[in-house]
Length: 165
Image 1: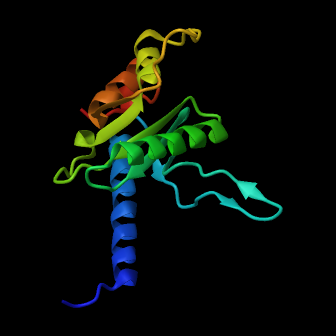
Image 2: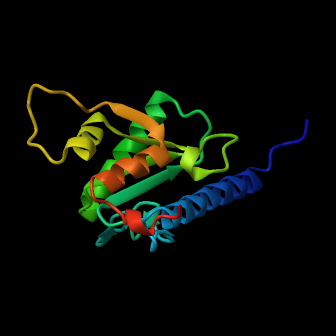
């Protein structure tokens, strides 16, 4: 058995992740966010400066997308990535942090998984409502990206008229 070249494996995984981000941005451009682009910078923290991570896709007003190219994410990985997406949304002043998981064997980003909280789904359907302390909607909901795009358009995000037929 030959040793694993960790450097090559890391480069391959980064390339796959970047390709998935570009594919997602292209899908969003064709479906109502004509300026969507892969973010080419990440957040950073130094001794005297800090910049928040803008998410993986830019130019989607009110929305932050965190893209993951991981096959079969565990519950813990999903929870951590959703937390990252929500923190990025808060830092960006966005309304929603959305986790997108590239599905193995699915080239079409519309068929990838989108993860949002049940509370976010509720608000996308009914509109903003005051939080109710006895209702717990902080649970992850998974749907295909194409279905989330429909909910986002319903709630006024993106430009449905510019979406490709």
